[in-house]
Image (cartoon, rainbow, N blue to C red; front, side):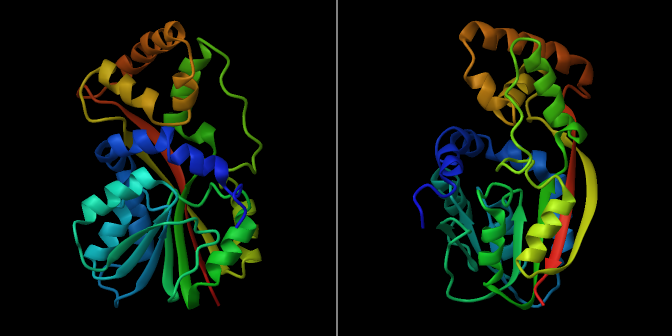
Length: 280
């Protein structure tokens, strides 16, 4: 494996993003809960015969632990050592689940899988065609792929609102090329269909799901601003601002959040694809 392969994402998730997502794990799992539910419903693991499952980009272990609790064997893989450390703590010796620090695009496994599942973990490969072709080798014939990925940023209020506030203070980050590794690299279903079919997968389908996402658990605009400024596409850009500009963003963020509060808490809209495919 080239040392440079997916290196930018490895660096990000072992430093800035990994630290923040580890510290905010409870709130982030709550934020993503509607889409975790959609993912698990599509996977159809409840009441199913025991399966061997690969959880790609498992992060702090939420989905892997849910799968194990349903009686299946699951290997969670991720490139983030901080998140995997938390996942292992949460597992606390639970049967049927293990975690590996590995890049799923070239990891090798001893047994084939019945299911490859991912909650927002497959959009970051430098070469997604090669990554899915590699991962598909480890699916049994008839094995399934089920993952969730974000639809375009304009459909996701949790992205547009913070970016609009940031733009009031400084130029927002330049948009990445649509095919660059990012949370929104799989927003175009035709691109994703081509990636999956090139990997030899069939029966590719996309189901849109929209849901409100909780932005932190602490009440009030100030605490919601803390969360929004730490998690999401604007977080890195905000962290790189001068203290004076960061303070301006905070003031404007609280002003933008205040009228959106309901019962003193903030929710913002999210929009995803639930993607399914099968190995013939």
